[in-house]
Image (cartoon, rainbow, N blue to C red; front, side, top):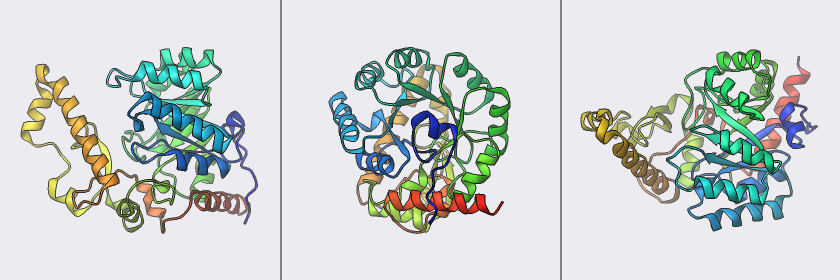
Length: 327
């Protein structure tokens, strides 16, 4: 097995062996996953919103730093829907995590404050216009979320988004979506990727704290079983097409669509939909229920068993080097 380091801008930025971020996944990412990913030579991030209180988030950061000793990241929702944003940002800066991944909103304040503490900021982007904006604000790298990504995917294929950003931006581009093997990593790097944010293939890991049913679903289902739903948050989100999802459908009903269009009610309806959706996700992730809404991306096509994160990363790296040698 060839486990030589993989040279890439992301590897150099964070001083890691392999340019892989185990992507921050709502309700899935946990301390155990971060520690395992970092110890295996990659890096990992967790959504701040996976912790209900600031104290819980602080404890998680300190545990990972103590146990892993390598770079970790926090995913931060930077718009007004995140009521804990200010406190989370302050804590993240105090604890000096290695990088922040921003989502949903302007990262200006986050970039300014993080840089004062030597923390890098990577910004989720789905198009060139927003990528240019965050670059002008001082972002250290772009997380190019393409339409093959899991969760809240983008609208542009990696085949179009990656070269578009590489040609028009001067900071590193970390590709998110459409990669589940080391061979695909090599292909994406040949197209200009400076690193990878990979999530779905790590759901079926022994360290993930979700139910065995959720993990097994990532083994049993494939890319053709991934569908978009607006039932969870009002924003399109990818889920596994289980019998339950087929039964309830993936589109909002006429009343939901009507409320979503009403100017006076839209804000509150969106908030209610988001809260209900997150409650459904939490129940599905952590309890045995036939009413399952499991988030995942097309890369579960390559998940064949539930394994430790170390084994998943080793296979990715070995496949990458084998693909490189064949060229």
